[in-house]
Length: 189
Figure 1 (cartoon, rainbow, N blue to C red):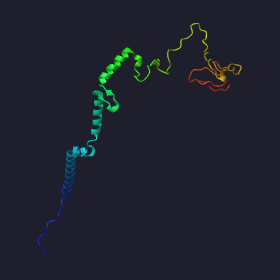
Figure 2: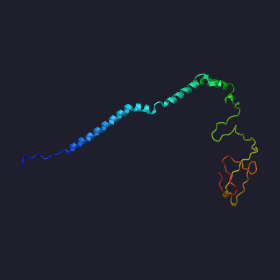
Figure 3: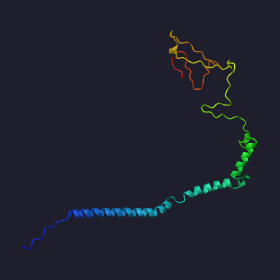
Figure 4: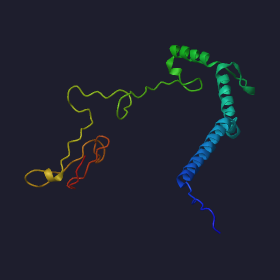
């Protein structure tokens, strides 16, 4: 069987690959755009379905609190009444002008103790103690500076340390200062 010769089949492979890739990209972009549109369109509905009404309790409590401080009314069956917060503040200021020792409230005794002075560091009660004018001691001895046992002098023996202050063998020292026993070689701070 001989007949006319046919042309050989030539497949355009590059064209098929380009069309396939372009089609896949187009499908992916279309799906992503539709999902974005759907999510944008339903996000408010979904949020209300998930979390809707949760702020109603907080709003209601805040409204109740504002009503409690801004309206005059009775406090239930207790026989007491509440007033506006602005009026209460005015009354407190008027009472403070009359007698500031009664700022602790009507049910507490008047505040007659003086407060701690605002000063940086460790608080001290009342006014600071005045130093004696003549230089003589007022009964309280000041601690002598402690020397380590290794710095006693040329003889190499440590001088015995005697406690100063009042009380049986107690050393009067500033708070936070530790005294080491004599001859222990432990440094003091």
